[in-house]
Structure formats: C-alpha cells, structure tokens
Length: 58
Ligand SMILES: [Zn+2]
Image (cartoon, rainbow, N blue to C red; front, side, top):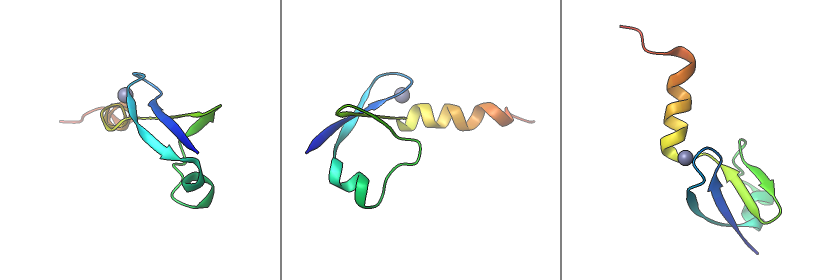
C-alpha cells in the first residue's frame, strides 16, 4: 500500500512511500502518519529548522 508523503510545514508533496517500508526499517523518526498520508519535512524546511535554534553566529 502506497501512502503520500507531504511536508508538514509547506504541504509540498515529497513523494510516495510504501507503508511496508515504514514498518520494516528506514522509518523517518520525525514522520507523522495520519490515515494514508505521512507528514514529514521536505529538505528545504528541514534546513530552515536546522538553522533556527542556533541562529547564525558571526
Ligand atoms: Zn516544506
């Protein structure tokens, strides 16, 4: 069964994944599955999240 993977922050479609993949291994720890949609973060939003806590120090 395929589920759709959406970005939590910008609702962009990241891709489709096999639900079996999730239960077996390489499950994304930040992934949140609701119905047949998995919410995660796209690389772009992930980057922003990574930058935010520490801010930039010059
Ligand atoms: Zn995003």
